[in-house]
Structure formats: structure tokens, C-alpha cells
Image (cartoon, rainbow, N blue to C red):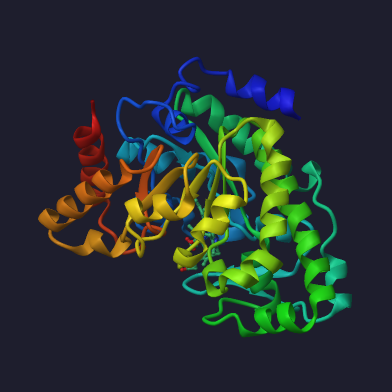
Length: 355
Ligand code: CP3
């Protein structure tokens, strides 16, 4: 697996030297690299056109659609990295979990997991279960040339929240009830999800992804002591399993201000920060030896351009406190965002940070 990964990342001579990979490795960069979480998707008219009549999970299983949708924001914005078009629920669907992704709602699970018998559906993921992912990543790496492709997966807590609650949740009460009330069952669930996550990320790197991001989007719901006891061992195991593959590992969650130190301990190379903690303060909390990714509030993109510009310059200035900085939003692009503002922002980040 490791040899495969090295071979494919050597595919294009400019790749290893890209600003994005250099920043992740905390090396000097020609400009601050920038990409956006959810850069592909409903904010783009070309995405809405190509998705017409195709359900989300079907789109995620069709390599030609995956390739085209992943490339759309790269063409339009000139961002420094592509993110694989898929969803955190794709590996769970691939092993047979009965779920759907409902427009405007998100993932919905037919039979939520509430007891030990519910775990049976979470079998191991094999590369054959997601052959369309391998095919799409290979196709993308050819098309992208010197632009790195970021593979991704959902982290065990965030996946568990959907599996236990049955759908999106505000407070994750059932998830926490299981974590506090059934530690044995919680551990067994986390173990299985950890293995699935590792397997899904390995498939993407083996096929040529140059970096990976672990989305623990909802883990900010937990207090630090709960993160340390019930989540950190699994985050650590995931990052340790990926280390031999030699690609940068990014760790992101929302509302994680109080968890940044622990997330730094989990073993990623880059810690993603939402908009609530300024990057200079985040650098202090995460500690040395990590790059940071973030963290413009996605809602700032609705403000007049002067405000967008001022706030983006502030993110860049504070990002200099970190050992490496990848510019991004503090969470995903909202569907009603004007793509022209994102284009202008991308150019601003490149021009302002060019040395
Ligand atoms: O451009 C990219 O960032 C790559 C694609 C991507 C999607 N989902 C596509 C998608 C990525 C990285 C994800 C990850 C994901 N999925 C996360 C973690 C990131 C985060 O936002 O914190 C989570 C929590 C999910 C679960 C999920 N899937 C949600 C909450 C939703 C949105 C529901 C909605 O319709 O508002 C989805 C659906 C989804 N995933 C869409 C896209 C483009 C919208 C589906 C559509 O176009 O019909």
C-alpha cells in the first residue's frame, strides 16, 4: 500500500512541490495555498446542472460524475487543491447500511444503532466495496496534473452520531447517552468505525490521493475530558495507521476551540480550525509542529467585498503565527454563496500572500 501511494504521488513532477503540500509539511511556500470545504456542490450552477435527476448517493458511485464534479471548482476558482467528491456516509452505504442522503436534510438511517445487535451491519470495508472510488481517484489524478487531490472520511464520532440518532441532530443526546451509559458498546462501535475509516482513506491514497482530511464535524459537542477518554484513542489509531502512507493528514471539526490541544495530540499534520478561534490563538492551543487550516467564517462571504477583504487579510496575518497555513473557510461553503465572491477571495489570498 505504501509503495503504491508513493508511486502515484510521484505521477506528476510538480505535485510534491505544490504550495498546498508544502504548507501541510510546514515548508516555505510561494503563496498561501487555498481551497474550500464543500467547494464542489450546490453553490455552483454547473453542479446543479450535472446533478439534475441524479440522487446524491448515486452521483457518489459514478466515476465520470465524481471526476467532473470534483474538477468544477478547480477550474472555476484556481484553488490549490481538489477535494474528492463523495460523502462521509459513502463507506457505510458501501458495506450495506440502509441509508439515504436527503436533499436539504442530510444523511438519514433506516435502522439506527441502539444496541449490540445493531453493530452487526458494520462489517469491514474492502477496496472491492468501493471500486468506483478507486476508479474515480485514478481518473482525477490524471486530470489534475500538478494539483493535489484531498481524500477524506468521516471520523468515528461524527459517523456514530448519524448512525445512532438516525439523522442530523442538534445536541447528539442519544449518541452521548450511549457513550456515557454503555461504554462497552461505545468502544465496540468506535472500533468498527475506526477500521472502516482507515480502510476508506487507504483506498483513496492507494489510488493516488495526495493528502487526507478526517472530518470530525460534530465532535465539538464533547467536553475535553470526554474527547480524551472516548474519542482520542480512535483518532490516534487512524492517524497512526495512515502515517506509513506518507501523505499529509488533516484533522477538522466544528466548535472544537476547547479541543484543539487534544486534536493536536491525535497525530495529524494539519489541524483545521473553525471561525470561532483566531488562528494565532489556535496556534498557541494546538502547539508547535503542526500546520493550521482555516478559518474565515463562511457567512462573511455574504458581506460587502470590503468586509470580505479585511477579514481575509486578518486570517492571513494571524495564520503567520502557525508553522504552516492552508487558507480555508471555518466550515463548508453555504449553497447560497456567490461563486464570484469565492473566485475573488481565491485571487486575493494568492496575491496578498505571494512573496
Ligand atoms: O466539496 C467538497 O467538500 C466535497 C464533497 C463533500 C460532501 N460531503 C458532498 C455533499 C464532503 C467533504 C462531505 C462531507 C460531509 N458530509 C460532512 C463533513 C463536512 C462538514 O460539512 O462538516 C458531513 C457532516 C456530511 C453529511 C452530509 N451530507 C450533510 C450534513 C449534507 C448536507 C445536507 C444538505 O442537503 O444540506 C450532506 C449532503 C451533501 N454532501 C451534499 C454535498 C454536495 C448536498 C447534496 C446535494 O447536492 O443534493
